[in-house]
Length: 263
Image 1 (tube, rainbow, N blue to C red):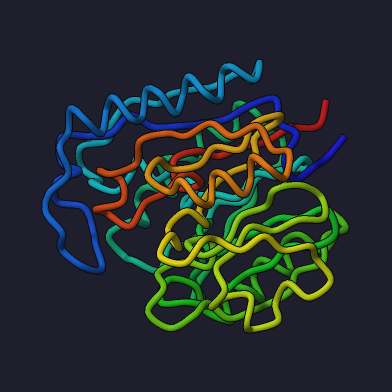
Image 2: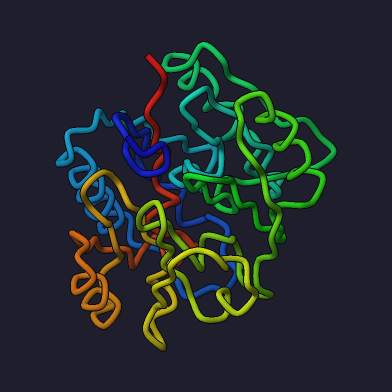
């Protein structure tokens, strides 16, 4: 049983009306709340279609970006770790997630300062945890994570997020135990040497933020050549609308915490 893509549970959070005030690297317009909700519902349905138990938390109007729950925590089999987001306005989201995590885990740990780290910069594979330093994750945050998971037998490897890319997983995702979907610009860094790599089609770099969730690969809609490549490689592709989340630099991985807690 894979610990990196075979899951029994997921946690999502409903988008809030305040999401129009969410952070964004480039302003391409405010997201349409009704369309965002429709996309989010389709996303949750796709997770549930795999047989997973999906908890959808109520919207947090005080935190416009709180729909992007992945940045708030890291969920592993052995326990959960509350993150310390690099954006100060988002740190309350991490604190608000802790009570929910404690309903699933006996062991919930927390990143202390002065470093910071967000879940969008963390890729868990079968053999290691890769963490990309970025504007939202620094070396001190990576060191804090390394110390917290040492007794859970995880190896943490620090890598670099490409310049002008918000999160490490903006440009990559796990497809199976041996295979990474990634952009060519990230692959060029050598961080995935030793893994089989499938590159996004030219001009479809935003497709790199997908998720493998049990039998499905959830891929944002609008990237037909990458979807075709993955389909020919044998993956069960489910394409989900993501136009509104993308206006806030969000993708498939950002919208859920995915895990299989120990019995």
